[in-house]
Length: 262
Image 1 (cartoon, rainbow, N blue to C red):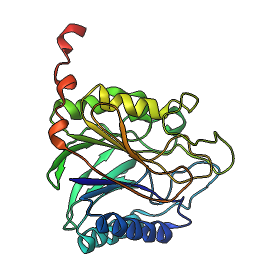
Image 2: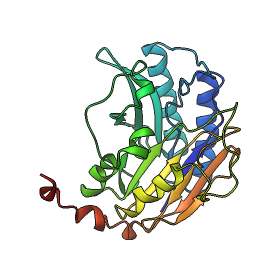
Image 3: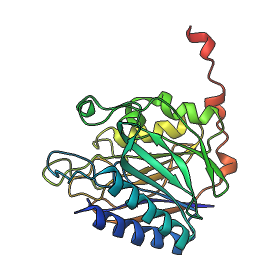
């Protein structure tokens, strides 16, 4: 089975973001991927100060989601689409899950906000599992995947074979100049992603923006912690890898004994 993670450039507008979703989803589908994940808050773009993305209404965001649902159906590929989202008066950071037939399966909200995000979004309060294309998976968004391993373990102990990790760890102005995935001098982000896979015995698939100064690469990491595929730094595109879901046993996650920590 093949899965994909996208490395788009920061969208210039909502329309530009949708066009990138269309092209990268087609590229992944052409390589027979069953599902593709995009970076955190890709529509309309993560609200970092240096980018200052335009604010969009609930109606505009819903129209964008509907368009991406049509893209998923056209190319027969499931899409994990991180967006800004309005729900019952709340403004959330979410990742929508769209089936390969264009059906909306729900969303995972970001529950553990970074302290810098407290004035941007409201934190979600639920965790969910999804099933599509023959795999069971969870989603953990950026900060909660890097610094809250409980979010990944929650999915793993409930049978998730893959946890997708849309994130924003990027800048066009300054930052590290990376060349080798997982190098000892790289920021800790890739090491954290490796650990999320190892400590749960599952696949961990992470999607980041293709920026001038990324702090991690989009990558697919095996249950033993080995990176089996990653997108070259600063390069837009899709990373596709075969995964063997029989290896995603969740063994270490399932051996966790919560009663020992009361």
